[in-house]
Image 1 (cartoon, rainbow, N blue to C red):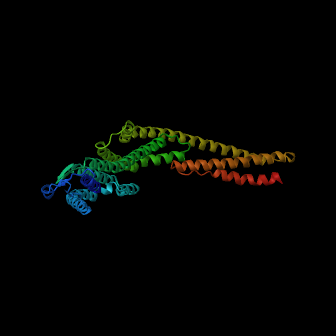
Image 2 (image 1 turned 180 degrees about the horizontal axis):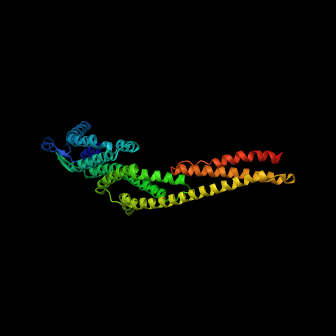
Image 3 (image 1 turned 45 degrees about the horizontal axis):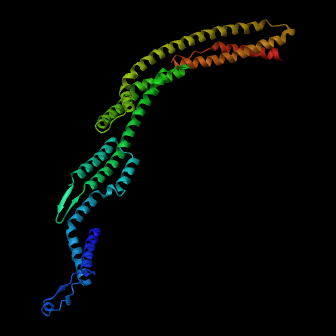
Length: 354
C-alpha cells in the first residue's frame, strides 16, 4: 500500500509543480480589469498546507479502500503462511524421523492433498471498490509449497515400502540358500532340517502376513505413484516368493533325505569297522601272553605302545559314533570290549617298559 500512496503523492507533487512553477497561469481579477490594469493577477499558488491536506486525504482514502484487500491478504497468511515460513518443513522432517505406520503416512499425505484442493478453490480474482486483486501467482506458489512437503512425505513412504520389499525378498533368499546348502555333518543337517521346518511353518506365516500388507500398500501407491521397471520387478518378486519357494522346499526334502541316508550308511560302516578293529586289538593283546624273550623286550614295548595309540584312536571313533547316534536319535552303543582291552594291556605296558 505504501507504494500506491507514494504514487499518489507523486501525482500531487506534479500538480503542485505545474501550478506553482514559473509557467503557472496568471488569472486577472475583475477589479484589475475594471481598473484597466492587467498587471494585477490573482495568486494561484498552492500552499504547503493545501498540499499536506491532499496528502492526508489521499492516504486516508487509500487506507479505507485497502482495508478489505488487506483482510484478504491476512486471511491467506493465517491459513497458509506455515507452508512457506519453515513450519511445515520442520513438521514434515520431524514426522519422517519418527516411527509411523503406513496408514499414518497416508493420512498425512492426504492432509496435504486436501490443503492443495483448498488452495485451488480460493478465488483467483476479487473485485473491490476502486481495485481488483489477482491471486493466481500466490495460489501457484502455495500449491507448489504444499506439493513439495507432500512429496517429501511420499518419497519417504515409497522408500520404506521398497525397504520392506527388499527385506522380504532377502528373507526368502536366506531360506533358499540354507535349504539348498549341503551340510558337512549330520549336526549341520539336523540344524538345516530344524530351520526349514520353522521356515515352512511359523516363518512362512509371518512372511505371508508381511506380503499381504505389502500388497495392500502397493494398491494404494499404484494410484499415486508411477513405479519404475526396477520397482515393478521388485513388486513381482515379492508377491511371487511364496510360490517360488515351494520347489526349493521340495529340493531340500530330497537333498536332506539323500544326505541323511548317506550319513546313516557311513555310520553303520564305521560301527562295523570299529567292531572289527576291537576284535583285532583283542587278539593282539592276547598274543602278549606269549611274549617271553628277554632280548625282545624293546620290540614288545613298542607293540604295547602301538596298541595304546590305537586305543586313543578308537576312543575318538567311539565319541564320533555316539555323537552321530545322538543326531539320528539312536540308542548309544556301548563298547565294553575297549574297557577290557585297556585293562588287559596295562600290566603288559608296565612289564615291558620296566
